[in-house]
Length: 182
Ligand SMILES: CC(C)(COP(=O)(O)OP(=O)(O)OC[C@H]1O[C@@H](n2cnc3c(N)ncnc32)[C@H](O)[C@@H]1OP(=O)(O)O)[C@@H](O)C(=O)NCCC(=O)NCCS
Image (tube, rainbow, N blue to C red; front, side, top):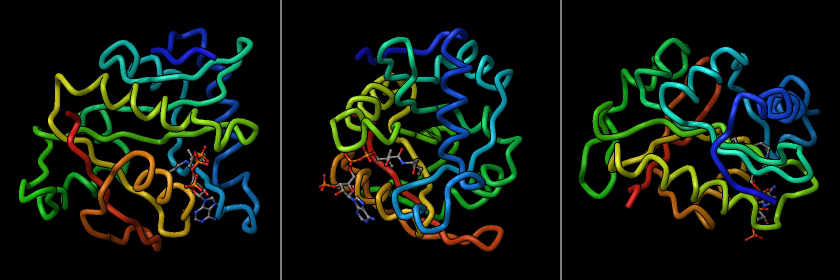
């Protein structure tokens, strides 16, 4: 198992893992074990690699079994949810510090193949991704759907993240999460 920055040759395998865990493909009774909602194309992922080196992968036997995305708000702003998060970002704080598009970046989605869950892959991918952005930003921000308790448990108990508040968007209820990068 290797944890490293992704290269373009990892992206087909990464997208297979994303699709398998996308809300559209996860049955309702399995959503408590996690799902992702972000849609992203291979071209957008290539861009994230080129411009921000923002794709971390866990690779086993040549297959991507875990990944995390991370990028500046400027990268994410074309997505409607992230544009909304940018609008409300300054209402949230961590340790008394207001979150802004300059002092924070957006991480996620993160995804771990079912067969590798609970094995420490989450912590390794999360930590690699967080450290990879630490020289650029003092804070990382993400959102978690309130019907994804597994992700909330992983990020608070294993990732050390804190809930900065909640927000609603497009009929969904989210936690706004934050952490210092160092
Ligand atoms: C979210 C995800 C990355 C977490 O990785 P993971 O390997 O499953 O995480 P872990 O199993 O190490 O930790 C999850 C914790 O949640 C707990 N948990 C499991 N199911 C749970 C549930 N239904 N409700 C609450 N907690 C739950 C586990 O017991 C574990 O805690 P513990 O080890 O202290 O007992 C992974 O489940 C995943 O990829 N899910 C699909 C995609 C996804 O949801 N991505 C996140 C989008 S925000």
